[in-house]
Length: 100
Image 1 (cartoon, rainbow, N blue to C red):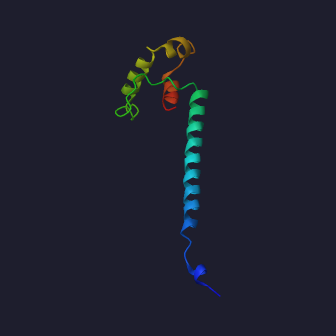
Image 2: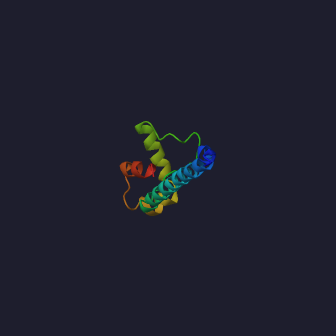
Image 3: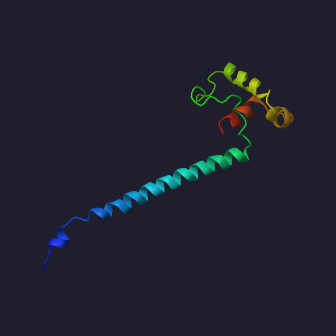
C-alpha cells in the first residue's frame, strides 16, 4: 500500500474556503449599500447636504449654531423651497434626514 499520497497536504483545499468567505463578505457589503440607499430614497433624504465636502465635511455640525447654519443653507436650495419648505420642515426634521 502506498500511503504517501494520503500524507501529502492538500494545499488547494484552503483556497475555495477563503474565496467563499471573501465573496460572502462582498455580498454582505453590497446588501448593506442597497439597504442604506433604499432608506435614503424612501425618506427622501438624499438632497440634505448643501455643500459637498467629502473630506472636511465628514463630521456633522457639532453645536446648535452649526446646525442652524446648515439648516439656513438648506433653506436656499430648490429641494427645500419646492418640497420640504411648504411641507413645514423643522430643524428636527432636517437633523433626521441629514444622516441619510
